Image (cartoon, rainbow over all chains, first blue to last red):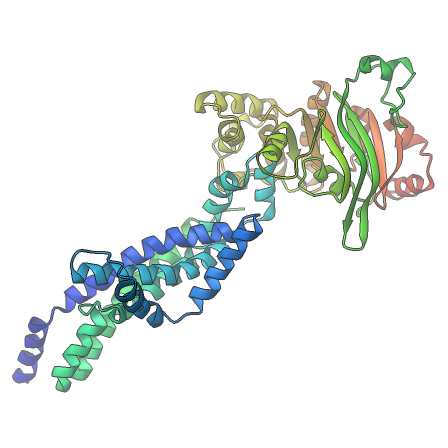
Length: 229
Length: 271
């Protein structure tokens, strides 16, 4: 029994599990930030009155939503960095981290876009008509009237996208971010097969602990911020 | 010249059939529709509509549902596009889109059946938004203007509330103030009392009558005959996408000329 516990604690000391989770949190934070900006722009394009912009937005969503994230991540390293020689940082780890953030952002932006569009659908058409009727053109009407209400209606689906993004941040392993959780777990398993259940459990519980508050917070926020009609 | 046409009894060549009531000086044509056509699929909702509304005139559009009266009203600030014909407001033809259209819409006030107050903004912000964001007015002046307009329609004490906290009648009066804040040349009312509980209809109509008496040019789609009698210069009766009859309100309600109008009036007057 003592051997078992000391083995576990040795494992904990040997590998930086918390640091690995911190990496995923950082990937998620930056990925979510850029995905939100890009996704909002895409949603604007898709609801705009200009057909060519609608078309570009639709094309983007259909391409990136339907491409596996692993392929996007691998492309970021093999295509963007190796082949196109685009460096996003001076050292390897910064570069890979940023490539992974870009991969996460461009993939999840498609989902953010569709979440916001579902939010736009919660805003009655009369709101847009009233905005137009007082002389607001498309962009000011979207910024002042439609999007503020759409975001409040989109909190729940945006929360789901954030949860997916946090878990998908483990795919950064495919972009050579080898110090994040899934890579760390794999290494630990490889050298400590006798503790495989404990190692699996450790990482599984870690993600559950991170995800549950996001779900609770978005449910609470979507109720609190709901637009009363 | 236009000042006299309606009072001398010698209408100009383009004077519509039902001339405005004598005694009220009307100005030059402000809203003009010429040969306006619109289809919804196979349905011909506006059929060759010709209509002139003069400055200061209050026009009531009446007719059975599906007659195209709402579409007509909405077409005047291009919330509905038209297939052909022209619509001019103050001599300017309606632009198809973009900045020019937004500028024209700012000159045309619109009040909707379902109020359409901005649900995420306070009553005060609903009214100041247009002056600030479209006219570039500063916050202080816009709030001063908004409060005076809200007072005028009797909801000054509701300024800090959210729209959902107000009754339908109060919301509609805020909507009128919001439209007035843009200092429009003409006000469009698309069935402004149809979604209201009966006891709230009068408070909205009173605000509209006051507006009419101040000389605002108004195009009002409504079934409120009391309002038409009290405030309208002219009633336009529409059916099946056409203007069937135009007359001063008293004449229209007591002695409608067309069979279609008689039939319609008998249906809404029986009970």
